[in-house]
Image (cartoon, helix red, strand yellow):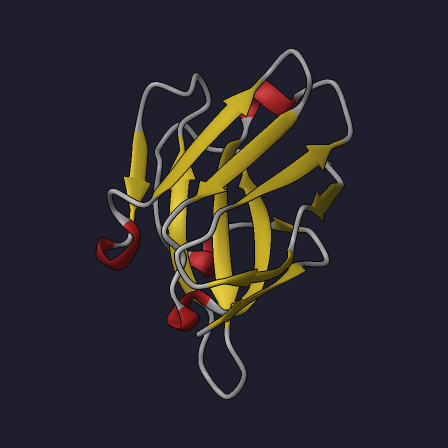
Length: 124
């Protein structure tokens, strides 16, 4: 099992930046594909970004490509989401997730471990 704790959320003006972090417990962090999802009020949870176990493969939803960057540090059991040029529509609770698989994917139902989430609010 792995436990996930997010940090780094907050309030930022449109065009600004935030860096989210997700700290994982356990010694097997490098065996998990990691991802970020978000959920805005009244909307369904949606995929944001994912990264392979080695960090060499990444996936992004179209609306964040070129603005967000996912990365991981297996030595420190952490995954990050660097968010630049933020927009009001990026406002949501952001959660990190882990899946013990070799394939990077976007399907939230297959991610078995979740953090509690961190609020990101972008003002216009």
